[in-house]
Amino acid sequence: MVTFQFIPYTEVESLSSAKRVNKLLNIVKENKIVIMEGRLKKEEEADLIEITMEEISSKFKGIELSVVYPNKNKQDLGQKIRGTFANILLGDRQGMTIIGPASVVKKIEQNPDKIELFTNDNGNGNKRKARKRRR
Amino acid sequence: MNFQYYKEGSNFKMVKKFFKNFFSKFKFNPFARKSHVKLGLYGPPNGGKSTLANRVCVDWLGEEMSSVSHIAHETREIKIKEQVNIRNKKGKELTFSLVDTPGIATRIDYEDFLKRGMKKKEAKARAKEATKGVIDSIKWLDNMDSVVVVLDATKDPYSQVNITIMGNLQARDIPVLIAANKVDLKRANMDVIKAAFPQYEVVGISAKYGKNLEEFYEELFKVAR
Image 1 (cartoon, rainbow over the protein chains, first blue to last red):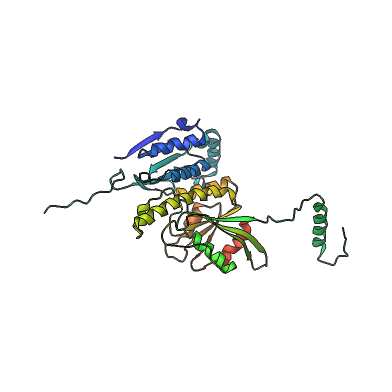
Image 2: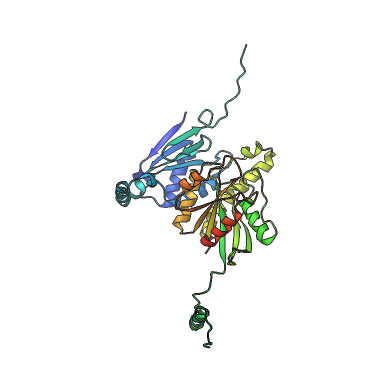
């Protein structure tokens, strides 16, 4: 079983960068996949990686991270102008951030407008045991 | 202040000398170049950062600076080679400190090293050192004057690690050159890397075999400041 936890942007908007990163990481360490409305600042993404490394242990192997954001290169002029206004109004609320524990998520591929999330064998990080077939 | 009788072609030198002398009275020399440029090699693990660092050091200093391995996270601490001096065809010189950094990753599992034939104790120690290495790489971003991001041209460049590295360099206003490494391999695709990061100059190289290093060194002159 794989658990997704949705975090609306309003839940993290008023938090400091450190508290925001810690909140998300604590949920991930419970073996849940976080889907957060909006995205972290680039510096916060770097902090997330740094804190993840500090937390790595025999039980926690790290995270898989993916951020979905409109591809500006594929937008026409009108879309870019509207996008600029949206960016001014909404800021980091645009897009979506996915963070999963490495024990559950094997990898997340972004290519670049779709996301494919590959989980480990049975979704909870445990290796599937080989079964002997009776003949 | 001495005004020398000038010959044709020495006007610029005379003017430069005049201003240099003038500003020296105020302890200010606008003609001075930054004397200690730090050029960092960043990227995901196994991209070829240390191989490129060794290639640069062997080409210009005659000696290597880092150990390399096919097993990821071979570089687990920051390594610096100071006073690397390179020259281009026009005779222009560039001096910098070359900083080889551990590859940045979001996950490290000692079991991956076991699969590569390492013993458990050795694998756990490597994993622990690798996590510290990633932390140091991120902390050292603030110290860099310019960065070469070394990407494996045979792999998908759209990883979040690559995007995060580029975003942080952009946020810090650090000039970036992308080295698409391993172009000697058939699977290498530079066009995908150029499409992924169109805002940066991309140079295809093979650090292992020394392919296209002349173009790489030329681009370094534009990016290192």
